[in-house]
Image (spheres, rainbow, N blue to C red):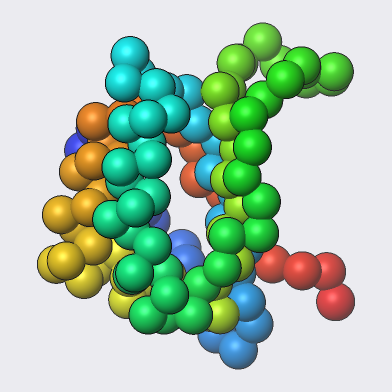
Length: 117
């Protein structure tokens, strides 16, 4: 997890005039959700500044179908555009908060999605 950077070039190829919904699959370190909550507290002003909204956040309960990869939690965040996400993650103030995220996650997957038209 640590040191991974989002593929901003891939994001820039998405439709610029449509929202992008980021699906976060998260496995916590020993800090657990409390450690991740510190990141959320620091990141929230950056999300608000660019007009992003958390659509869902919750704990994984049971895997009903799929691989044996176990995630602790899922968060779904809608950004007004791919560029809004890029602007946030390249902002120096956000990068400070992002360090808290790295410390709280053992592994993660971040999936960019767009709505079917």
